[in-house]
Length: 558
Image (cartoon, rainbow, N blue to C red):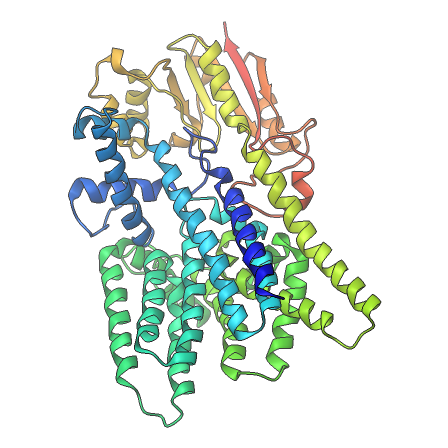
């Protein structure tokens, strides 16, 4: 492939991918429907409020680097807002944040999208130097449009940044092997260290950094460049561990508990996470199942390609890395996480992309007849890209629509009288609560009283967001049960994901009538929350018109 082809093709791929990655930038707002996003927003503002680098907050269970990226951005937004007259003072900006914190999710989602396209470019750069331009371009395409990768690059979580730093580290390894320059020692260490700071798991690349040192220095002498860069890496790891010990003990404590459990010991220490072991033998097959759900063709062809690269002549270090990292990562994930989720497998996707690209290029360059090899390559590309593009593009356009939960909340705001009783059975959904509703929640389960609720209680009633209601969230009550008989009238918002779930609402023993319904599909069939569980997108996306659960709004009482 000539340079002119790459000049137009690669930027085009990155531009299209970036547009897709921004698809969820404002999705659901002012609700926060994606998990593990809002906690980083809160941590970012807490860092600013306390003027500290130590993100040692009780609520913050994630590594701190993402909050470090968010905090200065939030500060800049405040300064610009004051200069332009949107806010009268810092205090006015703080009050705006307390009432509208979900709007700041946009910043994290844009950061994640930038890391997403950065990962695509670096994978291309790595594969081009190690393999060939053709393998590089196909690897970049497979990664850019992979549904799991796209899904995480759209959301303000740490998985896209963590995957970026893994790719950045292996690219730095390649440059280190090629140049032996000091800067690539330190950039390799920096990529691993920052990856640790954003998601811990990239730390396992230290094994390959050490192996690379041995590979390029067969005399067995440890070079000063390696010692100094290792010391720098150790300092970075120590800093991020110190910066949020809550997250450190939560993650590494669980790993220790699981290892002890494998050998028949029960480890129970004070730090949260140490008493929660994962199910190792359950997580291993589940990992492959999640990768199959992401893209069956990518898993099958990618594994074949990685095995093919392992047995092909070439640099043994890259074989050790391309096969060894996914295997070690699967092992550590199975040990570390008690409840495995799809996104935990994201760091394996770049390696599968390289493997799949290697298969296609090897077939294209094989001695098979032109017609046969073109037909085989066309079929493989159709299976790989057809699945990815169908899922990614359909998901992108669904993200341009309202979530069914947004529609239900907006219906209440338009139709329910101010002060009405609103009973919520909607996941990850909040509504304007009045003073009585907040005080009732505070009495029943104060754990769910957040900073916004506390701030609202300091305001006079006329400064509460309008309209507002006596809102009860079933999930936030101690027994998750509500005595409907104590209320003369109100609205009950019920959500479900299957026909069987719907029977619970129909069986509730109180007088009610259906006031409105918001369905993501024409008919009721079993669906799942694609925002949280990106499993089997191909089978689901073609049958729904919106994202979100089925919702029925019942009016009860007089």
